[in-house]
Amino acid sequence: MQQLLDTLPSKEQIQTFPVFQNLPMQQIQVINSLEQCHALEQELKSHAVLGFDSESKPTFKVGEVSTGPHLIQLATLDKAYLFQMSPAIWDFLKPIFASRDQIKVGFGLKNDAHLFRKKGIELNSVIELSKCFKAFGLNNPVGLKNAMALLFQLNFPKSKRISTSNWASKKLSPAQIDYAAADAYAPVLVFEELLRRDLLPREIPNTSLKLRIRPSSTA
Image 1 (spheres, rainbow, N blue to C red):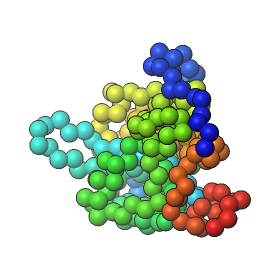
Image 2 (cartoon, rainbow, N blue to C red):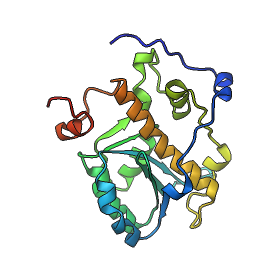
Image 3 (cartoon, helix red, strand yellow):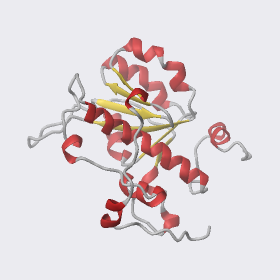
């Protein structure tokens, strides 16, 4: 594959880029009941690719063990779903996480996988996008902010104040909702752009899945 000439913009350059435009609020759904889950079950399962992230209430005391994730975000190109976790919602989402026919894409998913394993949740067909930038000469993992700058020349803002807020709260603030949705929506955009540039891993795990995202491919 021909080496790409794109180089990673500096922090100063990124500050001059247009700010990333997230999904509008009416396309972000906060889900906290099993009834809501069942209402969107077919809609969720119809997508071949889902952006994926999770948020946990921060721990501040030495030795304190996280009880998270408290919020799980899934997103498509036109909608984000924010699940406020409960035992019933964990059970609802289990088949989606375990499915080999739906790709879950995101950044920094190692910690998510660790938390999921502790809860006995199986994660299949997950693509860690941070490792998909070797063609740019970047052998170290690339974070979401740098990926958005590199691929789209956009400034993807990350608020430390929001990231360390209380994600276990029953009522999320508009800023939390916007932040959480963006963290699942932006990876879908990155995935689609890497697919367009033919830079995704060759070993996408499932043949039927490969055909759904690369219809012109042969099995």
